[in-house]
Length: 261
Image (cartoon, rainbow, N blue to C red; front, side, top):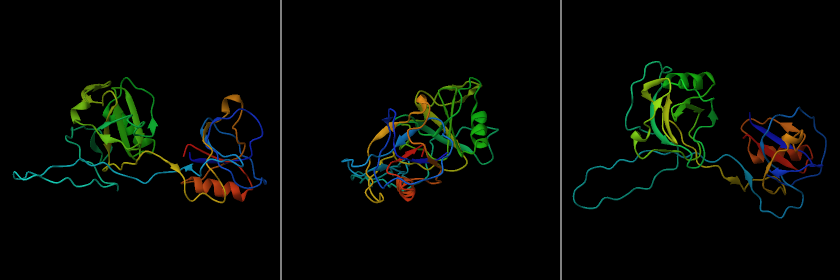
């Protein structure tokens, strides 16, 4: 669920959210608070530079190939930053996958954070088929198996994920079928119905902020103490800092916060 928050801060301890400053308060319709989140918002008169989190441009990782040449040296072409497909070095045959799904390679996990956005509960009886079907049923197009019993799902590879140096880095048997490979330590076996797209590491938005809004840091929400640090919530599809803060400005608020995308 993508959500954006906007309101004036009245009291309570605020630890770790993103702050930006804007207009004078007005009214808006309250909605019920949700569970915990990672918040961004700003205070009036902040001297910090204008930045706010947003989605990053997508990039892709593709294995490079070296064509045989003569004794003369070969040149290295720069890699592209636009999304491309990836080619795994081997493709294990697995029956029972969702229609059209296939192996997409062994990927390095956790270099910049998890490379798939959703984590399912550990399953000591996990197989490639069970993880893939669970991800598909949850609405995802990519499934990743790691460390025998861990199943991850997503629609893109995030945090600048890359293929592992060797496909054999994924060598741990699946908990539910020792004849299948389910990743390894920080190595994820990916399956999907199409070539995967890779997104870079998220960065803070520092352009196109509305009015005089300014970034004021990453803060922790106050849910543990009985409520969010900002009492009003909006759900904005395809949210970014510009969309959230523009809406907060329209309602007359001076503080806006973003969490969970």
